[in-house]
Image (tube, rainbow, N blue to C red; front, side, top):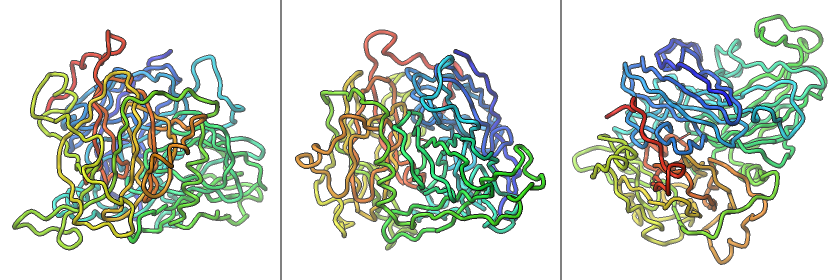
Length: 550
Ligand code: C2O
């Protein structure tokens, strides 16, 4: 195994998109940020130096961080932010994960521009469970704001209103030539006739799930969230923010230029959406590495072909795609279950504080919650530091195992008066090694919407998903106990549920949240506190000496 050393300098960098140059926060001046490429079993040492004017932390999305929760990164959960002028070194090892993950800022909405790919090749000396591709490309889907995204979210938080939607979607940092002033701002994927390419899709968008398709080509899914899958062929992918999907794509069409396009999957009922499409070009004639070189041969003259994308509200296609993802072989499902947890996930509305004017519906403030608790980050110390040092008053351990009120969560019109979220910084404690099953139940309190739920420090088997209210008598029979997929982010279907299972074998404090940033801003989060087991191998390592203090 190798150790990879990197220096990540967080800084403001001028970048031109959509006709206008903005100063955005980048790592090392790159947008998207640097790609990290390692082998399974390797370690990373990343010295982050903050030269920007914002507090920041970085998170290595999907990395299990076994016993190294100090390197996980969510602000005020596992560490205090790195202040302007400060630095912190993240040290961790990749254990038994192969495929694609990514890294991103975990502070305010900085991840809009501060993110990059984390590619994990097979262990040294081993190979892919599929034929070696000729070429590999990371494909990072993102969103672009003309305004500083941190200002967008600060204003929304102040007023209680919904934040602005983004101004464009992007593929590898480029909006594509359907946007104005963007002729040159189109990502090109050069391919050769007959060759197979491994495309590593990452949805790094802040607030939208996305459909992706490539004109004339089908894709074979081989991995998701850095776990291999049973290969299956599809013409469309759907990724929630946080999710990754690796596909093989064979350039088996007449030489030419084909659009890759992505647009929003907007599951929310009645919520306006921006049906904006981003494009890249799969190009059979483009010389690699020379995006501005003249095109050669017949491909230069051939018209661009546009793919067929599902309608923005095509829930059957979105859910069928996710349900098609399976583990390659039968797996050993953890059991028996020690903790049967039932967590509601959904939006809500707070009453406006007296004397204030709020910008949400009917003078309310937007909120979101799990089991009616709207998660609040502490500010005086991170939860993990408070737990480690035994500092009281930072968090409480009374996150409820079930919602306080039972009702028809997914009815067409759930009364808003029925339930208003209560703010709190609550964790759910788990004994080391216990087997945890969580029913994630979507609600229709304000609006029904699919929620891509992510758990830090863990991946989990998705045993089943479905629509309506979860009913154990009926739905436990639908569990896939043979080859469920291993994921770090699961889409809880709109007005539906997902059941996940994992072993609490990684001590620390682990954030659980919806990966739509606007929802985490509103409080759609909680955390597990996993106790140390017996001995060093079951315990959290001591905190690094340079861990930032608040
Ligand atoms: Cu991708 Cu809490 O993170």
